[in-house]
Structure formats: C-alpha cells, structure tokens
Image 1 (cartoon, helix red, strand yellow):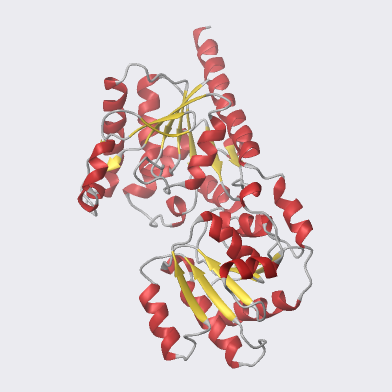
Image 2: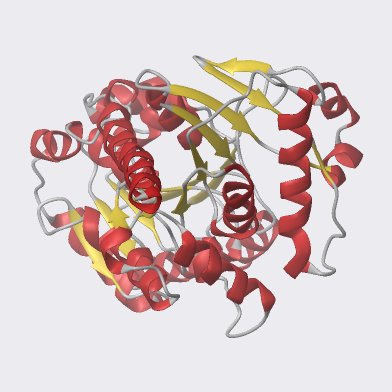
Length: 400
C-alpha cells in the first residue's frame, strides 16, 4: 500500500521541532507501507523566515522513511477562508505533476479543513479513497454556519474513514454527517522510552530545584485556549488559603503570547518566586520536569488528545486536567483528577487533592506503555488498508 499524507504541521530540516506527533505517527506508519507527505508551505511563513524558501523544490528527508514535499501554498490570510482548500489542492497537484515518482493508493489528510476537503477533491480526480484525521481545533473551532463548516462536513461525509483522536471529536464528526460506522477513535501514542520514571529527588537535583516543597507543572504553549490564566487564578487561590506546604511552586514549560500577561499578574499578586516561566523546554528536559513535579496540570479550554497527559503518566506523575477532548478517555481515579473547564476553584481544590493522595507511579506507567506510536500506526495502517480494499471491492462491484 502507498499512502499520500496531506498535512498542515510536519517537521522539516529547518524546523525539526514542528509536529512531533505527526513525525512519530508517520515514521512508524512508514515501516508498514510506503509513505509520501505533502505539507504545503503557507507563503506568510516565508515572510517570517526567508530561509524556508529553501524547502521549496526537492523532497525533504528529515523523517525516517518518509519523503516530504513542501510546495508553496498561496492564499489570502483572513480572507475567503472558505476557498483555502483550493490552495492546498493546487499545491498538491503541482507536486504530483512535477514528480511522477509519487504514486499512492490512499490519501490521508491530517486536518478536516482545508486539507480534508482538498483530499476529497484530489481523491475524486485520482480515483482513490481518502481518510481524514480530526485532531481538535479543526472541529472545536468551527463556526455555527458558513462555508468552512459546510466544507468540513463534506470532507467527513465523503471520507472512506474518519480517524478521531478522542471520543468527543468522534461524536462531533458524526454530528457533522460522518457515517458512524466509518468513524474510528485512535488515541495518540507515547514514546515511553523518552519519558522514563525516575526518583523525584534525582530529577529535581538535575534541574537545580529544591528537594522540598510541592511542584505543579504545566506544559504547553501559553495560549488562551490552554487555560493558563485559569491555572494562575487557581494557584493564587490555594496559596492564599494557606493549604499548601511551604515552598510550593508552579512551573510553566512553554512559550507564547500569554507570557507577559502571566508575568504581570504573578508580580501583582506577589507570587514572583512561586510562579516560574521556563520558556521553551526540550523534550529531554520536559521528561525531567515531569519527574520533578508532584502534579501535572492541564487547564485547557479545548484539546484533542493531549500528549502531555500520556507523557506525564509515562513518568509516573498524576494529572489534574479539564474535562475536554480525550482527557476523560485517558484519566481515571488511579492516575488523576478531571474537572470542568473554566473553574479556578474546582481546579485548585483538585490540585490540593492530587497533592495529598498517594499514587502508584509504576501503575501509571504500565497504563500507557501499551499506547506506543508503533501500536498507533498499526491501527491507522489497518484503517487505511480497509479503505483501499473497500474501494477496490466497490470498483469490482461497479463493473458487474
């Protein structure tokens, strides 16, 4: 089987950090079938980094077993979003026309719109089936009406299969018209080997953190959707109640536009020493911080399948998270606490409960060790193969 991936967020040789979860899924899938990826390069990105123009042209071999093409994606930002799919389609067509070596039996789009709808049109043109993956914001952020919603629905309705990273997204896909029997929930994987469990004191020593005092950790981009403002409010509340042991800390690992807002509030409420913003942290250091922390907190307003939850559990660290996306699929009372989003009081109370509870770190790790990227890719491969075989059977039936 030969698979063509249409992606919106793949790594490249100049930005190897992009799309780490797409990277692992594609690399593992490439061990099971031939994989070619097309990630159209949106022209505004070139304005911010002219070096990216060097990606246009020859295939990028930054992934093991996967050749990635980066054709130019022409569109008008914030204008006519309902026609953005045509820019993705045009970029894919140019790639296929310019490289006769790219052949495929199935198209896999990693976002409902515009990539999913472009995949639908390309599939019709080439006579192959297509599969759409829905990840979170592609469905959560849809307007109640309009072209983007209609075209997202059309992409899901015509797909041979829909791969949802959470039960919540699967439900939304069905509401948008996807046939329930064709919707598959495939949770993300985790590289357990890169997120080992180690003694908390050892992790803190390696990071230069005090051995004493509770540590809460939040990992992710500092964006409004991540609810970081809710977490600061929750931490302020439980600190003011005097229910935390001395030396309690809240660490943010990640960068983003909310940083200045968090810093201003932190300083205003007198928690400059207690709340630390670490900025961008490498994957290796994230594993150390997860082992150093008593609790990982994910206060998001929306999520798909948050890998930070899987990574924390791989490190044996309990999680307090909002009831969004795949969180209820990942967490039960043996490994964390789930709360409603947008409720600082409930979040703070759950953080205190998690801090006081005795957790079985080894059991948490065992819970996610079976959720490898290899297992994830095997499930995806079976779905893609089913789409190909179903399409072939349909063509045979149509000739009778």
